[in-house]
Image 1 (cartoon, rainbow, N blue to C red):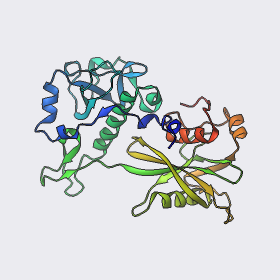
Image 2: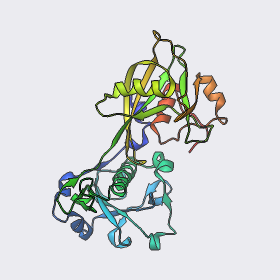
Image 3: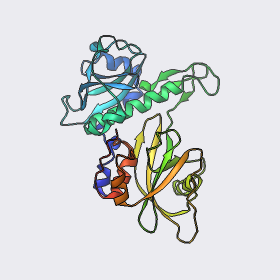
Image 4: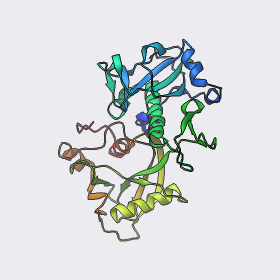
Length: 309
């Protein structure tokens, strides 16, 4: 896999030792909150506290209001961050920002590509696990309210003791090209009509990634593709996906008619490189933190500036 492509995956970067063994320690969160070396990453309404427009604020435990949820993210292994190597970091989900309300807060979609490797990894990890907690407050077996366990990495059914573990939803995203090396882009029904991106979809139970590529592209566009080639992956915690990037080619042996499915995809267009460049401003592309943007720019051969965020 080319290093140039890996470098375009902002949310796949990390400089964090997740230190899974500490999660099993009795009252791990309590011990971490008593450790003066511990630093807190405050989260409020999906945003993280910022030290600067391009860096997270990791603050002492005493600087943060009481949180509704704490999650141990691991130890910093960055040699270029202000905190020493080995600093334990705990995410704290605030219901009330208190004295921090007037501070600067950042959204991962907007700033993910501007953060350091360490901060991008911490924010992505924190948002992914916190979103899982928010969507799994009850036991799927008994219906009773669950409580956090293992330093925030499980939820526990208090009536049965059963541990519930986080889940990640695998989704493929595909740069489809035809015999003229044109790229296929589509406009989703949930977006503004001038926003275009690659086609994507969730992997179904019992399905390989390659089979998902072929099925999803046909379902959304009516195009038969061959030769799915894996490029790389990026977590996408909005709320809980792992995006698996592929390329694929239109099958020259099968006649395909470009047909939007009419439900998820309302419009489909083929673009040459010149056509895509000349359309910027008329259309918007995926934001710079997305793997979709990285795949598009890989095909294009360099950065594209459409003003999207």
